[in-house]
Amino acid sequence: MPQDSPSPADQADRFARAREVQAVALLEDYVEMIGDLIAEMGEARVADIAARMGVAQPTATKAIARLKREGLATSRPYRGVFLTEAGAEMAERVRARHRTVVELLIAVGVPAETAELDAEGIEHHVSDRTLRAFEAFLAAARH
Image 1: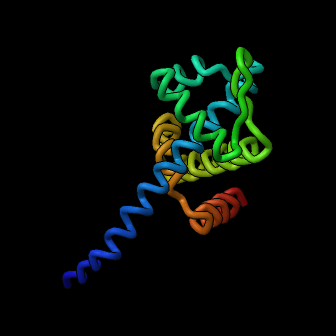
Image 2: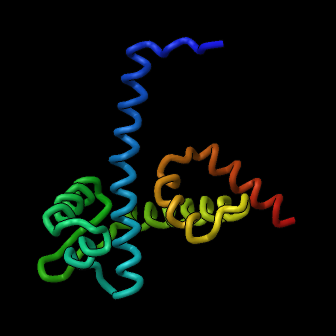
């Protein structure tokens, strides 16, 4: 039986939400990368951030400016980019969510390398409710 089509307003809301999730996903990827670079190299320089994100330096600079506006990062001339407390907390939440998604994918039979790649997209679209269900499934599977 065919399902009723969503109203134009419902469709617009869905697309607006998808665009919002994509914008947040980009911020999350940047804070995670900055955190990783600081942990690995002691600092996160724009050139390194751009190289790891696979973007041009002006693109990374624009993203970092947004992180600064959002209160997630700071920078100092000739020093690099640093996460604020809020940015560091976001980076840790993103890392934890990523690990949970990877573990779930592996638990259902996805090869580890594929799970890592797929988790990069999935991790940003998983609701807190779904993430808790993943965690409960994994906890039950461990026992």
